[in-house]
Length: 275
Image 1 (tube, rainbow, N blue to C red):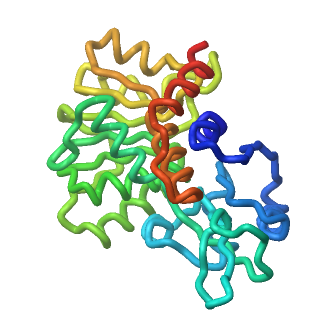
Image 2: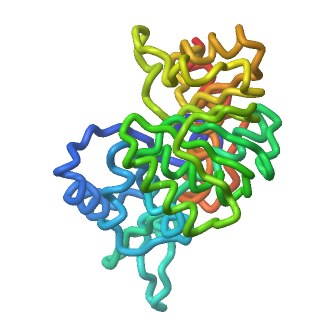
């Protein structure tokens, strides 16, 4: 996806994947800075860890408390900090600037893929760690009327619920399954990545027929057991491909200062995921 976007913009860049142990994250970020990387993306579990490892934060990173995109910036002769893509030669002083592109990608995907207006909606969210925490905070900021937050470890759900109540007191937050119909069920757990994974919710405590729409953040496999079950129950469904696309496109815009070629990136992503 990113390399397709980079090529469409005519840039002599390459996007590569590196596996980094959490214990080595700080030296990895420092090494990327020293080697004049334009920027990096971070995946689980690095998004929360990196919050203490960048030199400065964009308001998006501060708001959601997680960093999934870093842009490296250099100081020009006038003392201005500029993205490294604007320098012909690598500057001596370089800093790391942390961003979060996940939160906006979640709501954009929900609106475009499922046609959901989150304001006033009732949402059941499964999972409250990592991406789940960001999703829950973002949903609350969109003024959902009620958020039912369920997590395998109840304390995580309780902690996120308390944070939402402090930030958005008008949003009703529950850490239990709803007894009413919901406009959306959002899966922010990893259950569904493997073919033998169970459903991410308790069938004894919730009936999928009480959900108008189901969004699974997982995009590979494209049809998880949850989405198959939701379709059988008559729900509108979508997987996490749209979220992946929009967070990646925003990251490319942060690095380049140019509009991302969304259609090109979507085509490359769909070809990779769907074959």
